[in-house]
Image (cartoon, rainbow, N blue to C red; front, side, top):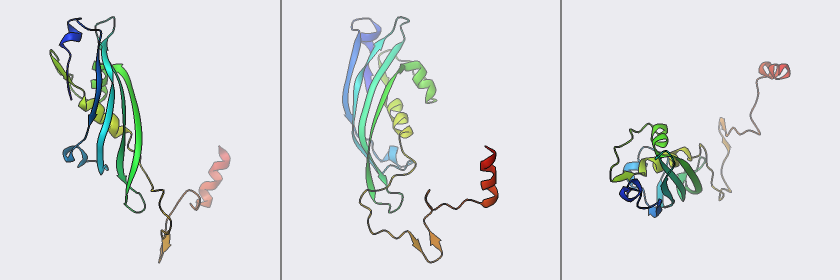
Length: 159
């Protein structure tokens, strides 16, 4: 997502508006748990502070499709991310080399890294009704039915 920043650098304008939709293709999704990530709405603006640093203000909203932890069925998981930081500092946080931006800047790596941080470890479908939670020699372990070693339970009293 290339953004032309010449007008901002040359002080012709005070900010650059961003209002776009982006869909991530299979090359992005292949190394993640994500099944689908379409129509991500990116709004915000770029501006400069008193020290001539470029400041990035973004709101990223969308719905990622993840596999259910129990059934592996697709589940929609809505998200909303807010970014308000110095562009150089943000690139350092995502371990990207800050490009020499004379005319344009690509903010897609920043957006992608922030979306990756929002992926939950576990998501379950709200449509689960008749799912088998135990069987021959196995049982789904949850917080309610988790057994605690009695020897380790004594350590709890020490705290």
